[in-house]
Image 1 (cartoon, rainbow, N blue to C red):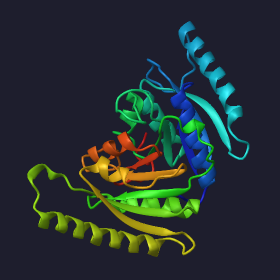
Image 2 (image 1 turned 30 degrees about the vertical axis):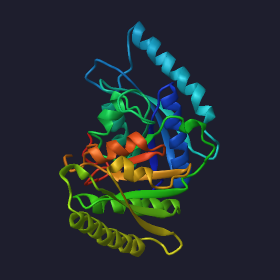
Image 3 (image 1 turned 90 degrees about the vertical axis):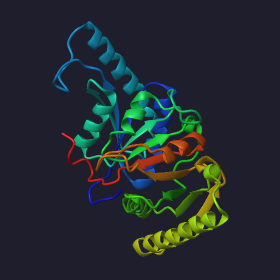
Length: 301
């Protein structure tokens, strides 16, 4: 995240608690990064053209109601955050948000996690699920209840570093975010010591040793890329599985975790892998999922 012009973030808004969580996270990220917010409500349409003026009583009623919701919520955005609200029309809410983010040149899409699906503080709705499996730009997901947090800025960025393809891109994103935000960066290597196959002790030691080497390398890369004024730390945490490992980390209100898209994703597309999905179940901090090979939204039509 970063760049010469003013950064923009698209908030996928609904007049629901999850929508309020998304807006609260959008405000927190915008304030931290000095970004502008576009608060977007996507309404369904059966038309081939995405933004025609709707006709018919049903569409008019729905549009009128959406305009009222936006008119009610926009004044709640703090005055120090530059925000504007608008309505878009698309057959799919996820596709509509992706298209709007591409059209606006946004750095990321911000959504609320509550809705039904996964367990835990993020019960993902179908829209969030679709975004996490198709968006060509980072998607930030707010845990349930974020709207009630008094925190105004991101306190620290945690980057879950792995050894898979795309790890370098993720680290680059985390470095850019910390640099733009001036926030400390914590690099975390999660070692899941799954005892399923009766792992030999030597194998566990080898896994831990490789994780240590990888974490040390990532720390060097981050330190060489960040201003000296920004604190960078590195830690390795292991557990019987990803959930167990991530629970051992200390978390504070205002923290943010960045994870990479699964190796199953197509280039420049997200795919929420099993590791990130497991983290979502146990974490109560916002998560940003980044594509393996992001090029803003340049191939979004």
